[in-house]
Image (cartoon, rainbow, N blue to C red; front, side, top):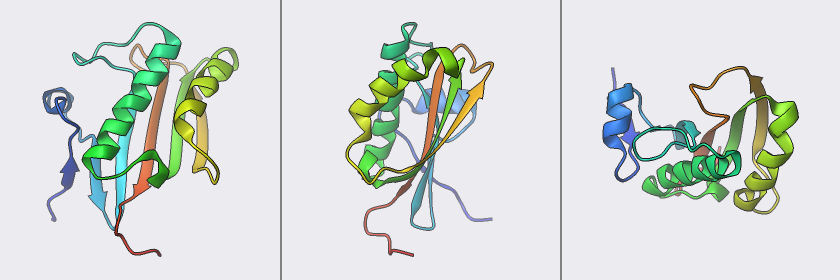
Length: 134
């Protein structure tokens, strides 16, 4: 079995080791990023929704940067939202600050009932810089 090429953002490796998962894996010219939530450095949720969404994007961007990517390299996004009918507009207004200009990545949105105390989670797949186009 090949060794996984793991990408860690600065300062959060202990949190990922404690929870036993990798923040991102490089494979086949792509970066597969685990779901990111608006967690503080100790892993606790940011309580206010807008701040939580911003922190989730900041956590995502830290992982992308550790791999030499930006959000512009993201090709696919999945978001998970607790109570999306009530929270979608607030979340999407914040997301627009990070999303950038068209063309946009593909998107799948999923409403869930529980996210371990969080209200929003975002996972992404990015094309690694220098990787050949398919």
